[in-house]
Length: 80
Image (cartoon, rainbow, N blue to C red; front, side):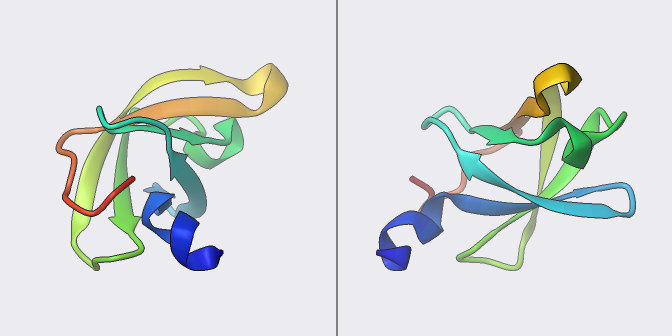
């Protein structure tokens, strides 16, 4: 079970804060919490399958419902 979803889980670093997100589509969109993103526009992302750091940009944050969408600059292989 965890093996099935692990390729969709990412770690997000926004400034000094860390959080997680779920890959939403094959275009590199990631759903996370607005409190994870904070006021950052550029974020660092690490996948479960690699220690390489990827860059992502904020697409939209909706703090009232604590939701945000970010988009990876490049979509690495192995993400689902």
